[in-house]
Length: 378
Image (cartoon, one colour):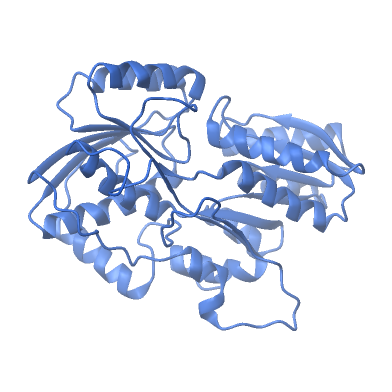
């Protein structure tokens, strides 16, 4: 259904059946972290790594709490029977395919109520604020009820969103990157605690290293709010410990290959590197490939649910991953967009920021997460 993020999505009966079957089996058809939505102010859950003697029921596993297909539309009654939306995000990537799964499920449920939702879901092959600005300019000329944006660079895009709202365009933000504070966008659905995610992952790394050692940070895209906030949380956490040293901070542009190359260079410059903090879904994979190749003992912590990253987690090469609830982000984005299209503003019907959770998982959780998301049983 998705074609590199560039298409108009219209839900089919076949997809609806596939998603219903997936919900019943608790297995993702395409791989995305599916978890319960929440409006808590802080919703990053860090799970302590258990000892071998500690056991718990399967329902208590972090993987199970992070993955949940059970979503239903609320009682809101839309004003129209047809809506047309436009969504643009940072770059074509499996992470946003997982968000799209939640969108498709909300779309299916609206169709069951006789309401047709169509939307364009588009992104460039590489993150670019300039490209996003051009897409927004073109979208503003289209016949869309709401335009949704996963902000590529808050300094560049936020003023553009302000002008769009001033001109009467209904604009929301979604995914992992909100606009700058004070932006006139109507609402945001996604991760509101990226700084805390970075801090939590780095705290886990520091504890693993005994609060001493040399650490590098792979950030992601320059200016991307989620990546920059996680890196800031990581830096602040490292700075708390006098025996922790930050030896490198590099931007990999959300590219596995670039993250691999950068990690090799960091290891060359600092062969006694103790750890790496990875701030997006791509760089844990690139870092793990490099660490494996060089037979380094560096400890990796990172973000999200890439299949290869989960296998590295299962093998103990990655220490922990912060898995975001992409499915809920997509599902709640469509629900919120419908309400915004009808002229509603944040309040009783929806918050100004809908917060979605992140769950930090460890090696013990990897096999179950692989099974739930990719049907893989190790």
